[in-house]
Image 1 (tube, rainbow, N blue to C red):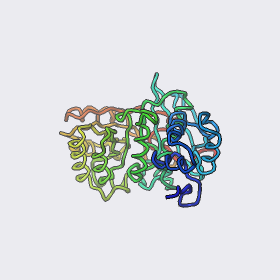
Image 2: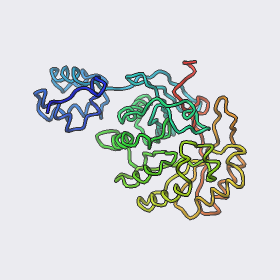
Image 3: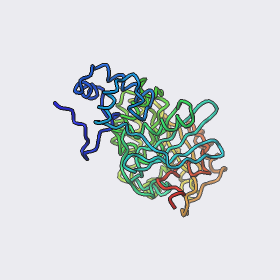
Image 4: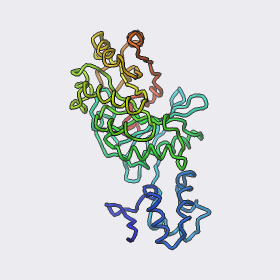
Length: 353
């Protein structure tokens, strides 16, 4: 069967979307020995070249043929901002003009990277800039992977961990997200340990169940933000159809299937989900389960009436959860001064205004 070198829109294929077998098929069709496929893969995945001309141990004729049939995708940096805490936020653009943001967060000799799975988001969470900004499209596995490469190269250091907590709902782009995680984890990719790769979901129950059956030990975080159904429905309208009772049940299945401890993300919003009834409900939801609660002071969004809770309330949550046997920590939000903290990512930037 002849190799099809265009996608459904008639554009050249991104070479990095090809499986090893498909790349072998292309190299063979171009009259080259099969070992050339592995050489090309090494240049793409280990050396992150942006031009076929950089593949110096690949014959010039093959390089020219590959350039004729494929592209190497990649990103262009539109804006980079640097926070006082050393974090850096990037607005990246892909070949079709789609934009997404990612953040690099250095700590001593380690680099954590927060990446996006979609350009925009359909979930509509009222405390999140991405959710308020609408949805463009899902990102491909290579576009997700490229964010980590871009940040790592800018810091000139290897990424030690990745959190998929940027723009988008990862489980609404499940297949591409899993491909990206496996590329990040692979020794042929960035070689990041599975337990250092975290996916955050609003609580798409069928996909949580599917995720629990994956063979890798990827980490799961769930954006909870309230254990009171009525409050959660208002804060997170995109998951109203998935009840907290059902979420509690599937998280129990997840722990039983994987033996891993999930994290619940909880943004403390003054007067909304930081009250005693809300705390009681959170304790009841987590009591007797293997879980960790990550408390986050709500980050300000322009034009929003929602305001962060107090440090005293956050410490009260930590103490009460500890009393029911649940470990909780208050997360130090990074990059708040450049709108790079939790809930602040969007596809727009001051340069666009």
